[in-house]
Length: 208
Image 1: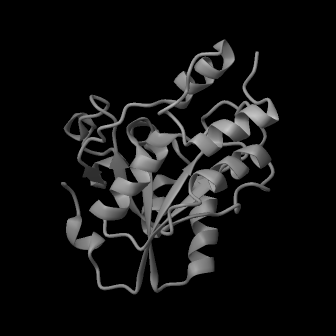
Image 2 (image 1 turned 90 degrees about the vertical axis):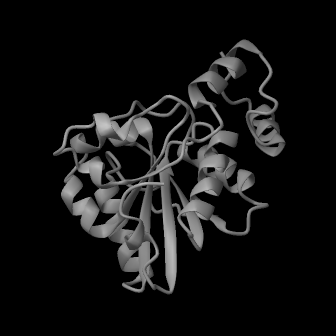
Image 3 (image 1 turned 180 degrees about the vertical axis):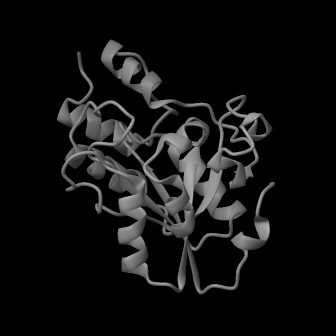
């Protein structure tokens, strides 16, 4: 691990990882990211925050209601994982700055927030709404899939250069791949929790 490790082991009563995304659908790669972050960053909890209409991303294929249900199902057996619907009812685009501001007010100053990003999000971080303000609210931590990002290649003034980069995740699963498999009737076993696969089947999601 590299980056500002001393900040991550500050003597605070609680350290919460904030894991936002569309989760369209949630899959085993997401669970692996949260598990790795929980251990590597010494988090007390990982909070999954599904976004209704995320900035810089296309609209998800299924409703925020279904996506929240799938997240809840996927993390049900992980006692240190939880879900926040703070972004589920926002109107317009979802901005991480607003999410973190609300969470900071909710948890209070005794809780340190650690924003968990994938490599693609880290590269785009400079385009987010007020990245410097985000860095005042949360520590940045990046988990990448194999071959995704070399932080040394980011420009020196890129706001994600200050992030802590966790060793590469040994899982390479994408929601795009899963949606294509579901659309084409191909297997999705070992890509998602069985309970999520059952929910998708029972609700007829991601069909042609």
